[in-house]
Amino acid sequence: MKLLITGGAGFIGSNFIHYMLTEYPDIQIVNFDALTYAGNLENLGPVERNPRYTFVKGDITVEADVTAVFQAHAMDAVVHFAAESHVDRSLLLGPEGPEAFIRTNILGTQRLLDTARVHRVRRFVHVSTDEVYGSLESEGRFMETSPIQPNNPYAATKAGSDFMVRAAHRSHGLDAVITRCSNNFGPYQFPEKLIPLMIANALENKPLPVYGDGRQVRDWIYVRDHCRGIDCVLRQGKAGEVYNIGGMHDVPNLEVVRLILKLLNKPDSLIQHVTDRPGHDRRYAIDSTKIETELGWRRQFDFETALKATVDWYLQYRTWWERIRSGEYQKYYATMYGKR
Ligand code: NAD
Ligand code: TYD
Image (cartoon, rainbow, N blue to C red; front, side, top):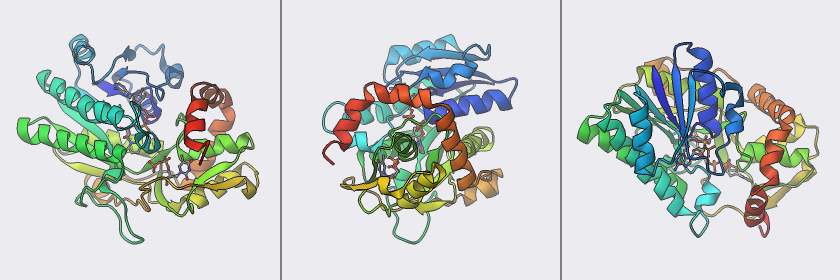
């Protein structure tokens, strides 16, 4: 099988490439990525000389780039990760804000769908998020049939892309499947997201900025379990269907942050409550019954073991995140947290 992976230089895409190359000795992978601030070829260092792996720099919003990669490689399937992925950035004014999200997440997805159709790709897996469902009260979990009610521009553009994928299936018969996963954590996650940001700040004895009261709930899943879920859907999912993938570990942010501090032997006094995110979703929790019963997927990693492994990874690969945090990231941090 030959797979086109978009966004493979990011967090989940790079973990997926490592996973697939290890699991399947016959698979070939083309990683198509624009290398935005979130794309990092260091994430693929261990496989860059693997003859079954090819990197192509390109932008999913640029027709010539997308057409060229499909013409150069006969793809069996596309697994589409490329996206602007950070909620806080989607709330900024200016070119890095919603416009960038609309361009990549909606227009870019449409460009890929059109090209996949022209080249008769056999399967298109669209990697989406539970955030399209909006926010839950204290009870209940998101089902695939829950209403789509996104509350921030990131989630709204992911919902838009989900609808375009659905439309490509319904209107043109494209064999497309959508996954909606909860919050991931693990190696290679860019340190703008909660878990790696808190680990890095704690290791540098900097304040840990918890938004609002810190009682917002997220359903955490180890990235490897998500990758196994996507692989299941790629191989066995039914065309036109949506599959939720969740970690079954929904806990308040403060609990996650305290556990990180405990694992690193750092004091809780590093926690600093800062102004809340506007429109902050209160609670996410996923019901994964469909993928479990129909495709036989199960979460394999429990949260505490996986969080410890993640903390150990950030300790071992300190140069990876220190290099990121020493560049453009400082401007980002000052914008986001300077006056909070
Ligand atoms: P990420 O931000 O770490 O990586 C995104 C990658 O896409 C980067 O390598 C970037 O260079 C690339 N990219 C961005 N714009 C591009 C463009 N126009 N053309 C080509 N490449 C482009 O994101 P992630 O956390 O790995 O998320 C991957 C996917 O999974 C996203 O679609 C996201 O919505 C979804 N998702 C993420 C989570 C999570 O917790 N991180 C949970 C559920 C779903
Ligand atoms: P994040 O990792 O940005 O994922 P998402 O917003 O997509 O769920 O944030 C996870 C949770 O952590 C979310 O409730 C916002 C909160 N958070 C903080 O409290 N402080 C921070 O510095 C960050 C980045 C997030």
